[in-house]
Image 1 (tube, rainbow, N blue to C red):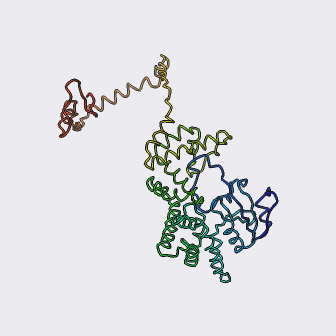
Image 2 (cartoon, rainbow, N blue to C red):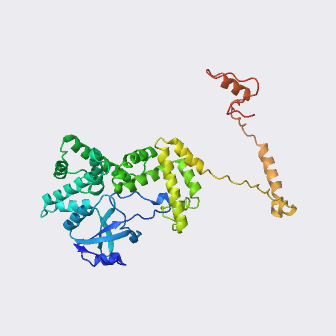
Image 3 (cartoon, rainbow, N blue to C red):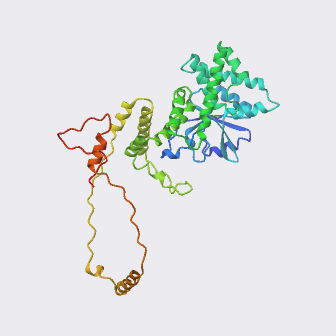
Amino acid sequence: MNEQPHPFPDDFRAWLAERGQDAYALVWVGEGSEPAGFEDSGAPRVGESGIARADADLTRIALHEVTHGRAETLRRWLQLDDGVRHLAVLTAELGVLREHTPGELAAELMRDPAGDEARFSEQLAGWFYRRNAEAQQGLELGWIAAAAAWACHMRALAGCPPPSVLTPSLQRAGELDDPTADLVVTTALKVVELIDRLELAYRTRTELVEDWHAVEPLAADVPALAPMAVWLLDQAALRDAHAQQLRAVLEPDLTDYVGDRRAGGTLLGTAPVLDEARTVHLAQAREAVRAYTAAAHSGREPDARQLLDAFPVPARARSRRSPPPRPTAASSRPSAPWRARPRRWRARSTTSSNSPSPPIAAPPQAPRATCSTALSAHWSTPGLPAPPSTRRTYAPACRKS
């Protein structure tokens, strides 16, 4: 372990690559700005911060320490993780950043014949017990939060805690029984299934809303699930007409630029550069759209209607179209080559009219419904009240013939 009390290096990638091939950086990752368009935000990789992407903002990270080797890195991550902030594990091979999940480190250590599997299982059991004990909900709900945290960070090792991890954790909490163990295993596998469904090519709005209802309550105790919950809500908003209407009102100059794409799906231009004021406005607009979508799909129709009424669609000013220019005498007179053509056409038509041609039968036409017939059919339907005699009534789909 190598503590790093110095300021953050300017070229972090090169600096980390110089630390050695087995060097791992443990960094705290803060929240960053979102992309300008809903469509640009791809499905999140749950358990990863995304800080290793080429376009990531490295000012979001705070270096905690540098470790060497997978075993030491996993031990320190299990000790430092507090379940609130995101602690990322980074390497820089050949100057290229790569993010590792603790589950990947644990899986590699467990497969190593020379590794101490019992020691690693004990470390994982201690971390899993802390995730239950430090959960704000407590009791059975604490084990649900711990199982969701396992699915986020350790699913590369196993979809649910193995018996070598689950049994010591339950024993330490004094809750070693079959119902609690079944609750942990079922919850972890359910969250893994939700995460796997993020990779599906197309999801209906109903499916997205159902998954959001399942993930959103867990995000309070498992912040690693928060990006997933937000992404599901944004995808549901993209399939909601009223939510898109609200977006068009709140961010009219940002909703259309993502549509300017090539046939291959790449953008024709870059994302619009936003100043501080417009960035704040965009964040507020997104929160309003998400608040409406959450209210509309959670049985809170009055709250959703209140948001729509607060931001009505502005009326467009009508503009009278100018009449087309009248043709002049010079433009209406045909040119010389076209003057002789009507004579030739007239001769051809006379010649062709002498030859007999079979008559063309007119296609049969269905009788047109009149207002009287439509009214009689409309009011003759059983169960409909008689038409009032004080005013004239027309059928909804009837027009004058």
